[in-house]
Length: 81
Image (cartoon, rainbow, N blue to C red; front, side, top):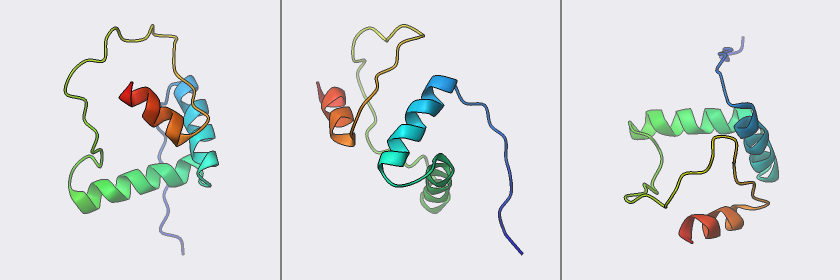
């Protein structure tokens, strides 16, 4: 008997597409990434996000603009710019 359950969530279609590509590049599915995030949340009893931005990074992107990265290193460079 499986301990898995199905849970439906709403995700912006562009974010889902980019997240799918990101996690595929890391060798995992979006489902696995969500399970990892939730597992770490339960273990740590908090949001498992360490890089909290204390100051705004300037103007937020337009609602229909999202950055697309080919690697985690590109994303980190963009965040640190």
